[in-house]
Length: 490
Ligand code: XMP
Image (cartoon, rainbow, N blue to C red; front, side, top):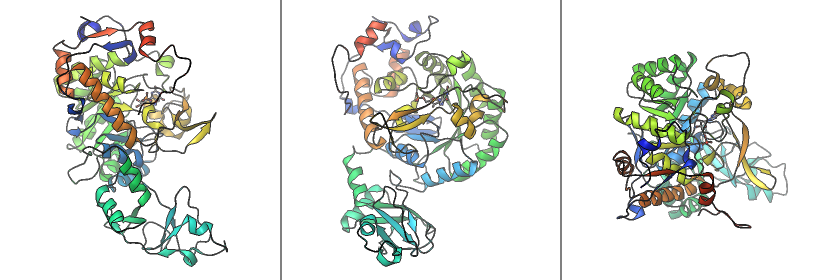
């Protein structure tokens, strides 16, 4: 019944996730027994198969921390000066709690504090994170002040108890709750204040589904990845990133099968033998072969499948994502190189399909860009709360520097391969990723696969069967025929 994967994908047709459907298998285990643990690259294990894209509207410190806390990972984008990218990695690696609060700092002589969204700010001797904490100012205290010309020292609260930044979330929570405290600054070993955690933060995080095994390096710090380009200057960038503690680097090109990328992979592998280097992007076996030969420890698969991509329209090059993932993953498995299915993920069903076609992880941009952990602020658009999300090949992003990914070198005329848009507010990834993973487990259960490996065994033994959906079948597979409905996922 149905088609085996080799037969389905041998017909010269480029399929994407929505084109194909997987036929159900036999269930003899509960959904909660499904193990989604995997590898990002040859030597980097993850407990969930989720990776945040190296894009400047997706992955900076807050996303990196949250994704690692969930058991996945984020790849910090390189559309920034090397020192700033390294600072983002350092910030992510200095935390043990799953969120960043980014408190404001004032000196005692400041007059009008800008609290931003926060209820509290810290007062330090010099008004920055590197000097001694001497008090806290509360927005409510400021609001009830009669004399708005008062200096911070006139109404600040006494110096709070400090918490070592090496405490994980549970330890910080019990310190705060056990001590009946409203807030506690987290202080690193060198005395720098890295965060201010409040009782509300603890209550918010505790209301989310319980986190699984976080992605930690051998020092117990969150695993964080970083993107680099293929220019000569990226060698210096790489040095900054390795010093900052990046656990893996992704060579970020839209067409990875180039002499520039091959040279960069070889350089990175020879300079930093312990560092895993992920190559890409590729969509064919020939491309994958070259990068694996160069020493790639992982491959990023996808060309033109991203929600903000216009590469296929502009350059006529690419491949349907289901076909690309299946072809590359089938080849890469024989070399023990994990594959990242990059782009085109807009629901949990797409994740199930990517994984059963052989991907070890999925990389997501738009799926994560509306979260509170993505960079940028929420805005209102036609009554919807949205965040900006832009392609790294959009003119706007390239103007900031990401042209290396799309143009390879300094071309005089810039032609965009991506767009600028916005995505809906989705709340915290700490909440919606656990629900998404639960949905993926249910998909695996329906297929009769209790782990990624068992799905792969079913795929390659041709027990797993597929069919192509017609346009009408795709319509039928979505919600249809209702006058109105509300799409609630959890
Ligand atoms: P999703 O679908 O998750 O895709 O939003 C994210 C992936 O899209 C790629 N990307 C681009 N591709 N032009 C492109 O052709 C662009 O401007 C662009 N920006 C990002 C990238 O692989 C990312 O992970």
